Length: 148
Image (cartoon, rainbow, N blue to C red; front, side, top):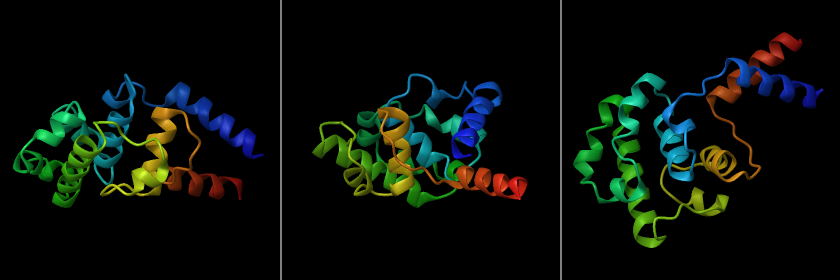
């Protein structure tokens, strides 16, 4: 039953899902991380406008925090922008611009919880980790209702 559900879900995404979003092209850990953080409670259309402003960790880490805070109105939360900047500085200065490949190390960074860390590792590094963001919750709730 679970296998059938996951197969149908993957098939639906291949046929009907979005495939043209900037973070879905040339996938690597930084792009997944930035998109996951920006997409939390923010519309995709708003995120696209801000996504390419900081194309790499070094660019984000070297930016003035006020430049990063300029993202606040579109991203809805200044704490999100501050934590993105803080995490980028940590990755740049302490990790040689390399995003960790272990879930515990990712979760030690600001604003990266288990689901975001799982998304980064699953989507960009091929690791198996659970992702339970609002979209996944919505799909599971709809499936539960339809399955009875």
